[in-house]
Image (cartoon, rainbow, N blue to C red; front, top):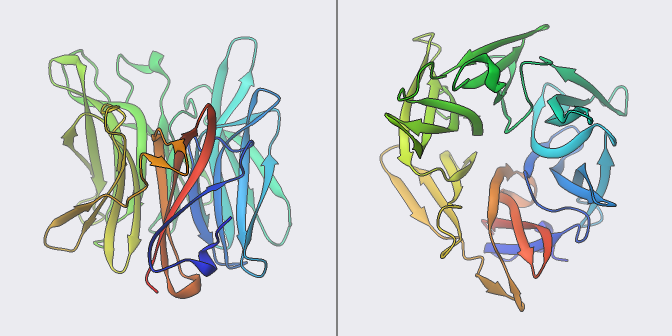
Length: 327
């Protein structure tokens, strides 16, 4: 297994936690308290989905993995963020297996306590499906799918923590034919301009059959959420800031004949695109890229940009890792 510390300049790739992590719903962040790079994703244990957690140990130049919140958190739909000195993860929890009722599950690691703690948030309203998270003007933010019985197209369920949790619904469509978000969120991040951004799956006007990528942003100077259509189709999206740029990674599951991980970045004037180069066939395996990726900058080793995503190694689901090294 290669390691970020020994990476060559340019793009590098590897597979992690083979046989346990599936790579589905990966989420990654840098935890400065221990100067460690972390990734969460869906794992499988005896055919049961679990929340799988890995972290890079710089002193050993290797990754270590564990299962968290076993029996409740499924690892289906997972995001992570650092808030203050605490490490947080949001995922889907199964709270009533008999009826398949899910909820938004929240875990956090406080170094003063030294163990992971978990709770259920916004029960019976937030489904826990397709979450995204960020830290914005001192608040811990989380987005996920609102339950469909709230309205025809319920939109995004948005929560923020300022000492107490608060929740609201955003960008829903009350009537068929209105454009709005389905609630399946791709990613959220604070851009270099200071605005909070969220990308989500949505519907185009007049047709439930035409999916689109919706983009919402909150400008503190304006004080309200604004939404727009970003593109047709619905790529899976990951966001990060790196070298002063707003970085976007996309996977287009609608294009199975040419699955690939695409990279775009905004330099303040224009968007630029590239393909990082994880080949469709590598080391004898076929890589079927799917499910949304995740991305983050990792300041150790002179600064690196990382992305994680699901792939197929033959018939085995795997966690795939690609990173760009400046040096």
